[in-house]
Image 1 (cartoon, one colour):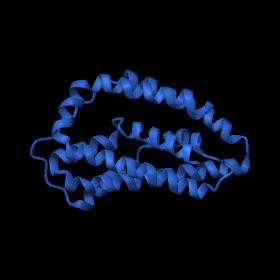
Image 2 (cartoon, one colour):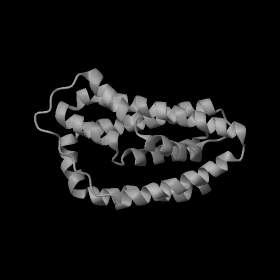
Image 3 (cartoon, one colour):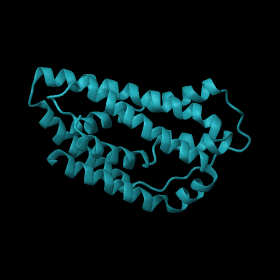
Image 4 (spheres, one colour):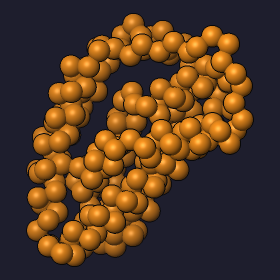
Amino acid sequence: MALHTWLLYLLAVTGLSLTPGPNTLLALTHGALHGHRRALCTIAGGAAGFVALIALSMLGIGALLKAWAPALTALKWAGGAYLIYLGVQLWRAPGVTLRPPAGAPALRGTRMFGQGFLSAISNPKALLFYGAFLPQFVDPARSLLTQFAVMAATFAGIEFAVEYGLARLAHRVRPWLERAGRRFNKVCGGLFAALGVALPTA
């Protein structure tokens, strides 16, 4: 993966990781309920799930490229359209309402890891999203395995850092997210739509 492509990918991944999703909200909830250190188990589980989904997406992309070389161009345009659709959906979404249940029982670390992993891997929209997002940065002239390793490590690292930061600041971030969540969704929705327009033509 060329350096300028990786830097663009890094910027896009950072913006996407800040978008509220099931794993982000789970890390926020566990940070508020169990503390940021124990929430590391949840976050690690989510990162493992994301790597597994990226691997599945890259396997599908690789198989498609072997079957039909121009598939990457088609994937980029279809993926761009899907990112625009996600942006519109997020723009119209209501703000986040996050109220951890009072007196929630303490969870073991293995169970928190499992919850994070299942939250990531059981979301069919995530697999569809990776199928739309990753082809924008794939260079068919380079090793797909190397590109997978770089993309997966970058995404998992950024996602881990963002979710851990939210878990540490759970008590401060949650009220702000509930108060300004509608505007935040519009900003994130605009980011998705902008990526959908810009990436296929980059």
